[in-house]
Amino acid sequence: MDNVGQSAARIPRTACVFGASGGIGRALCEGLAAAGCERIYAGSRSGAGPDSAGISPFAFDLADEASIAAAAEAMRADPPEWVIVATGVLTLPDGTGPERTYKRLEAAAMAEVFALNTIGPALIAKHMLALMPRGRPFLFAALSARVGSISDNRLGGWHSYRASKAALNILLRNFALEMARTHPEGVVVGLHPGTVDSALSQPFQTNLADGQLTAPAQAAGNLLGVLARLGPAQSGRVFDFRGEEIPA
Image (cartoon, rainbow, N blue to C red):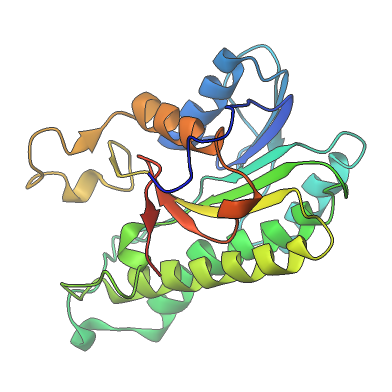
Protein backbone atom coordinates (compact mmCIF):
# COMPACT_ATOMS: atom_id res chain seq x y z
CA MET A 1 0.00 0.00 0.00
CA ASP A 2 2.83 2.40 -0.94
CA ASN A 3 3.76 4.55 2.05
CA VAL A 4 0.16 5.21 3.05
CA GLY A 5 -0.54 3.82 6.47
CA GLN A 6 3.00 4.22 7.79
CA SER A 7 2.29 7.57 9.46
CA ALA A 8 -0.10 8.10 12.35
CA ALA A 9 -3.70 8.69 11.33
CA ARG A 10 -5.06 12.16 12.01
CA ILE A 11 -8.38 13.88 11.55
CA PRO A 12 -8.35 17.66 11.07
CA ARG A 13 -9.92 20.18 13.42
CA THR A 14 -11.45 22.00 10.44
CA ALA A 15 -12.28 20.80 6.94
CA CYS A 16 -14.09 21.94 3.81
CA VAL A 17 -16.00 19.82 1.32
CA PHE A 18 -16.92 21.30 -2.05
CA GLY A 19 -19.81 19.28 -3.45
CA ALA A 20 -21.49 18.51 -0.13
CA SER A 21 -24.93 17.91 -1.66
CA GLY A 22 -23.80 14.87 -3.66
CA GLY A 23 -23.90 11.35 -2.29
CA ILE A 24 -20.21 11.04 -1.54
CA GLY A 25 -19.79 14.71 -0.56
CA ARG A 26 -22.55 14.50 2.02
CA ALA A 27 -21.09 11.24 3.34
CA LEU A 28 -17.66 12.87 3.64
CA CYS A 29 -19.14 15.69 5.73
CA GLU A 30 -20.95 13.24 7.97
CA GLY A 31 -17.88 11.02 8.26
CA LEU A 32 -15.66 13.95 9.22
CA ALA A 33 -18.17 15.05 11.86
CA ALA A 34 -18.42 11.51 13.27
CA ALA A 35 -14.62 11.27 13.43
CA GLY A 36 -14.38 14.39 15.58
CA CYS A 37 -13.73 17.20 13.10
CA GLU A 38 -14.93 20.29 14.94
CA ARG A 39 -15.92 22.50 12.00
CA ILE A 40 -16.83 21.45 8.47
CA TYR A 41 -17.53 23.96 5.73
CA ALA A 42 -20.02 22.23 3.40
CA GLY A 43 -20.33 23.79 -0.04
CA SER A 44 -23.06 23.18 -2.59
CA ARG A 45 -24.76 25.06 -5.37
CA SER A 46 -27.93 25.47 -3.31
CA GLY A 47 -26.10 26.42 -0.13
CA ALA A 48 -27.79 23.59 1.77
CA GLY A 49 -25.75 21.05 3.72
CA PRO A 50 -26.09 18.10 6.07
CA ASP A 51 -27.96 18.99 9.25
CA SER A 52 -25.33 18.09 11.81
CA ALA A 53 -23.47 19.86 14.59
CA GLY A 54 -20.33 21.60 13.42
CA ILE A 55 -21.32 21.73 9.73
CA SER A 56 -21.44 25.22 8.20
CA PRO A 57 -23.12 25.24 4.77
CA PHE A 58 -22.14 27.72 2.06
CA ALA A 59 -23.09 28.30 -1.57
CA PHE A 60 -20.80 28.15 -4.59
CA ASP A 61 -21.13 27.49 -8.30
CA LEU A 62 -18.40 25.42 -9.92
CA ALA A 63 -18.81 27.44 -13.12
CA ASP A 64 -18.63 30.83 -11.35
CA GLU A 65 -15.16 31.74 -10.12
CA ALA A 66 -16.47 34.77 -8.21
CA SER A 67 -18.60 32.49 -6.03
CA ILE A 68 -15.56 30.28 -5.31
CA ALA A 69 -13.45 33.32 -4.44
CA ALA A 70 -16.17 34.63 -2.11
CA ALA A 71 -16.44 31.27 -0.35
CA ALA A 72 -12.69 31.16 0.18
CA GLU A 73 -12.61 34.69 1.50
CA ALA A 74 -15.28 33.82 4.06
CA MET A 75 -12.95 31.10 5.42
CA ARG A 76 -9.84 33.28 5.59
CA ALA A 77 -10.07 33.89 9.34
CA ASP A 78 -10.21 30.15 10.08
CA PRO A 79 -9.05 28.26 6.99
CA PRO A 80 -9.71 24.52 6.83
CA GLU A 81 -6.85 22.11 7.41
CA TRP A 82 -8.35 19.75 4.82
CA VAL A 83 -10.05 20.74 1.57
CA ILE A 84 -11.84 18.00 -0.38
CA VAL A 85 -13.31 18.67 -3.82
CA ALA A 86 -16.06 16.07 -4.22
CA THR A 87 -17.49 17.38 -7.48
CA GLY A 88 -17.55 15.85 -10.93
CA VAL A 89 -19.73 14.78 -13.83
CA LEU A 90 -19.89 11.70 -16.03
CA THR A 91 -23.27 12.25 -17.70
CA LEU A 92 -24.24 15.83 -18.49
CA PRO A 93 -27.59 17.24 -17.28
CA ASP A 94 -29.08 16.92 -20.78
CA GLY A 95 -28.37 13.18 -20.74
CA THR A 96 -25.22 13.28 -22.87
CA GLY A 97 -23.15 10.38 -21.62
CA PRO A 98 -19.49 9.46 -22.00
CA GLU A 99 -18.49 8.95 -25.63
CA ARG A 100 -17.62 5.36 -26.51
CA THR A 101 -16.16 6.36 -29.87
CA TYR A 102 -14.37 9.38 -31.30
CA LYS A 103 -17.24 9.65 -33.80
CA ARG A 104 -19.50 11.00 -31.04
CA LEU A 105 -17.20 13.78 -29.89
CA GLU A 106 -18.86 17.22 -29.72
CA ALA A 107 -17.00 20.39 -28.86
CA ALA A 108 -19.71 21.85 -26.62
CA ALA A 109 -20.10 18.66 -24.58
CA MET A 110 -16.33 18.28 -24.22
CA ALA A 111 -16.03 21.89 -23.04
CA GLU A 112 -18.74 21.35 -20.41
CA VAL A 113 -17.12 18.18 -19.08
CA PHE A 114 -13.75 19.92 -18.80
CA ALA A 115 -15.35 22.96 -17.14
CA LEU A 116 -16.86 20.77 -14.41
CA ASN A 117 -14.19 18.07 -13.98
CA THR A 118 -11.00 20.06 -14.53
CA ILE A 119 -11.39 23.83 -14.59
CA GLY A 120 -13.79 24.08 -11.64
CA PRO A 121 -11.59 22.05 -9.25
CA ALA A 122 -8.52 23.97 -10.48
CA LEU A 123 -10.20 27.28 -9.60
CA ILE A 124 -11.09 25.93 -6.17
CA ALA A 125 -7.41 25.09 -5.73
CA LYS A 126 -6.45 28.59 -6.88
CA HIS A 127 -8.45 30.25 -4.12
CA MET A 128 -8.20 27.66 -1.33
CA LEU A 129 -4.46 26.93 -1.57
CA ALA A 130 -3.85 30.66 -1.18
CA LEU A 131 -5.34 30.41 2.34
CA MET A 132 -3.00 27.67 3.54
CA PRO A 133 -0.52 28.89 6.18
CA ARG A 134 3.17 28.17 5.76
CA GLY A 135 4.88 25.90 8.25
CA ARG A 136 1.74 23.92 9.09
CA PRO A 137 0.26 20.73 7.64
CA PHE A 138 -2.64 20.99 5.22
CA LEU A 139 -4.29 18.69 2.72
CA PHE A 140 -6.01 19.42 -0.59
CA ALA A 141 -7.69 16.48 -2.31
CA ALA A 142 -9.89 16.23 -5.38
CA LEU A 143 -11.93 13.26 -6.54
CA SER A 144 -10.41 11.85 -9.69
CA ALA A 145 -10.82 8.46 -11.37
CA ARG A 146 -8.76 5.45 -12.31
CA VAL A 147 -9.75 5.96 -15.94
CA GLY A 148 -7.74 9.20 -15.87
CA SER A 149 -4.56 7.12 -15.82
CA ILE A 150 -2.87 7.10 -19.23
CA SER A 151 -0.66 4.08 -18.57
CA ASP A 152 -3.55 2.06 -17.11
CA ASN A 153 -5.87 2.72 -20.08
CA ARG A 154 -6.63 -0.64 -21.71
CA LEU A 155 -10.14 -0.08 -23.09
CA GLY A 156 -10.27 3.45 -24.50
CA GLY A 157 -13.59 5.25 -24.88
CA TRP A 158 -15.22 7.69 -22.46
CA HIS A 159 -13.05 10.28 -24.17
CA SER A 160 -14.03 13.55 -22.49
CA TYR A 161 -14.32 12.02 -19.03
CA ARG A 162 -10.95 10.25 -19.25
CA ALA A 163 -9.23 13.32 -20.67
CA SER A 164 -10.74 15.68 -18.09
CA LYS A 165 -9.59 13.47 -15.23
CA ALA A 166 -6.11 13.03 -16.73
CA ALA A 167 -5.91 16.83 -17.00
CA LEU A 168 -7.03 17.18 -13.39
CA ASN A 169 -4.35 14.73 -12.28
CA ILE A 170 -1.54 16.68 -13.94
CA LEU A 171 -2.84 19.93 -12.45
CA LEU A 172 -2.80 18.37 -8.99
CA ARG A 173 0.78 17.29 -9.62
CA ASN A 174 1.66 20.84 -10.69
CA PHE A 175 0.02 22.33 -7.60
CA ALA A 176 1.85 19.88 -5.34
CA LEU A 177 5.24 20.80 -6.82
CA GLU A 178 4.53 24.51 -6.56
CA MET A 179 3.22 24.37 -2.98
CA ALA A 180 6.16 22.22 -1.84
CA ARG A 181 8.52 25.15 -2.44
CA THR A 182 6.80 27.29 0.18
CA HIS A 183 4.61 24.85 2.15
CA PRO A 184 6.73 21.73 2.75
CA GLU A 185 4.17 20.18 5.10
CA GLY A 186 1.34 20.36 2.59
CA VAL A 187 -0.27 17.49 0.67
CA VAL A 188 -2.08 17.77 -2.68
CA VAL A 189 -3.56 14.54 -4.08
CA GLY A 190 -6.19 12.99 -6.30
CA LEU A 191 -8.54 10.28 -5.04
CA HIS A 192 -10.31 7.44 -6.81
CA PRO A 193 -13.32 6.43 -4.67
CA GLY A 194 -14.24 3.32 -6.63
CA THR A 195 -17.73 2.87 -8.07
CA VAL A 196 -20.03 4.59 -5.62
CA ASP A 197 -23.80 4.21 -5.53
CA SER A 198 -24.54 7.79 -6.55
CA ALA A 199 -26.23 9.83 -9.27
CA LEU A 200 -22.96 9.89 -11.22
CA SER A 201 -22.72 6.11 -11.54
CA GLN A 202 -26.43 5.23 -11.63
CA PRO A 203 -26.74 4.93 -15.43
CA PHE A 204 -23.84 2.46 -15.48
CA GLN A 205 -24.65 0.13 -12.57
CA THR A 206 -26.53 -2.63 -14.38
CA ASN A 207 -23.53 -4.71 -15.47
CA LEU A 208 -21.40 -4.36 -12.34
CA ALA A 209 -20.10 -7.47 -10.63
CA ASP A 210 -21.38 -8.28 -7.15
CA GLY A 211 -19.58 -6.25 -4.52
CA GLN A 212 -18.23 -3.67 -6.97
CA LEU A 213 -20.77 -0.99 -6.01
CA THR A 214 -19.96 0.84 -2.78
CA ALA A 215 -22.40 2.75 -0.58
CA PRO A 216 -21.54 6.45 -0.13
CA ALA A 217 -20.89 6.13 3.61
CA GLN A 218 -18.49 3.24 3.07
CA ALA A 219 -16.72 5.05 0.22
CA ALA A 220 -16.35 8.17 2.34
CA GLY A 221 -14.96 6.13 5.22
CA ASN A 222 -12.44 4.49 2.89
CA LEU A 223 -11.26 7.84 1.54
CA LEU A 224 -11.03 9.50 4.94
CA GLY A 225 -8.95 6.56 6.13
CA VAL A 226 -6.55 7.09 3.23
CA LEU A 227 -6.36 10.86 3.70
CA ALA A 228 -5.69 10.51 7.42
CA ARG A 229 -2.44 8.66 6.68
CA LEU A 230 -1.04 10.77 3.87
CA GLY A 231 2.08 12.88 4.29
CA PRO A 232 4.15 15.25 2.12
CA ALA A 233 5.96 12.27 0.57
CA GLN A 234 2.71 11.29 -1.18
CA SER A 235 1.89 14.79 -2.45
CA GLY A 236 1.25 15.11 -6.18
CA ARG A 237 0.00 11.56 -6.65
CA VAL A 238 -3.35 9.82 -7.07
CA PHE A 239 -4.57 7.12 -4.68
CA ASP A 240 -7.50 4.77 -4.75
CA PHE A 241 -9.85 3.95 -1.87
CA ARG A 242 -7.45 1.23 -0.66
CA GLY A 243 -4.56 3.65 -0.40
CA GLU A 244 -2.82 2.19 -3.45
CA GLU A 245 -1.21 4.60 -5.90
CA ILE A 246 -2.74 4.87 -9.38
CA PRO A 247 -0.07 5.30 -12.08
CA ALA A 248 -0.05 8.41 -14.25
